[in-house]
Image: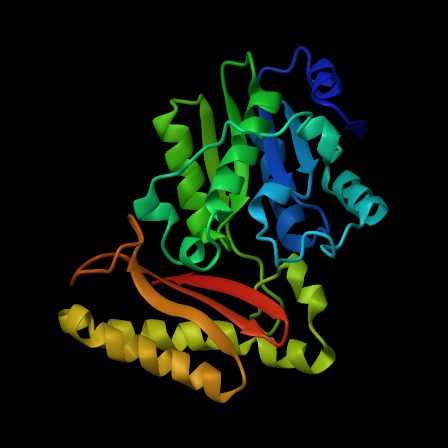
Length: 282
């Protein structure tokens, strides 16, 4: 497995490759990331993963400085998963000057849910992803990039980015990996205490209950939905959580659903100091 620290080195090491399969990460890797790397293998002629903690997508009060950085363990896991090339730029390599040109996603998609509670988050995501795509795929006729469905709204933003900029990149969504009890795997799960880890599965259980209730009310879902969502939020609050949202949305665009729409249930809530997100397609 090769390692590139600069965009120049990355492009040199990718010389002659026609269709890279790319998995962007912020490191502190878990089985969800590695499943994407293994999924990438047959899809291209080089499997590339990036490790870069992107300051642009963190709010000032968030955990940029304390975000776990586990370089040696990450490299060992990536090599075992079949990664060919790791792109691990330093911040000064990725942003050698202030990044004043930025990608501003469609507010109708990016300023709701995660974007409402983390304003500017998807500007940071869109900007770094566009820059990573330019670094990995420049001059190539096609490419593949893989993102986990756990970050459901992020996946939708990136699909829209690729479509609207006519990038020759196929976006593949990987299924959410879960622990045996159903907790969605996340790099931030490591922040949880032992007691919090035992409690954390309640977020996925709350989403399952909300999904069940939404299906039961399918014929008149718009009328019943505010009450169903409020009940789900109250149930988590009663267990000591601080929920930002538990909601049922239309899969196509994450807008409030009408009867007959394909649905996705999404949630974000803080347990102690740790903010967890999850979703469930219905």
